[in-house]
Length: 60
Image (cartoon, rainbow, N blue to C red):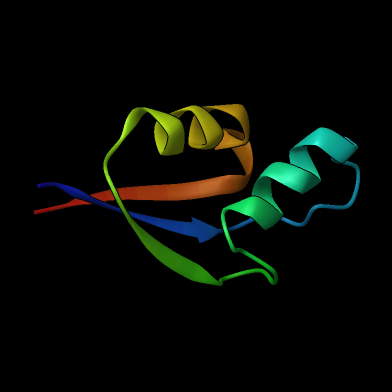
C-alpha cells in the first residue's frame, strides 16, 4: 500500500481554528515536522483541507 509523507511548511498564524485543528490531528506541531501515513480517504481529506500549509510526497 502507498504511503504519504506530509511536512508542515508554513506557519499556522493566520489560519482558521478548523485548519489549526486539522494540522494538529495530523500530528504536526512545528514547522518542518513530518509524519508518514498510509493512503486512505480520511487522511486525503485532511490533507486537502490544509494543502496550502503542507508539502506532500507519495512513497511506495
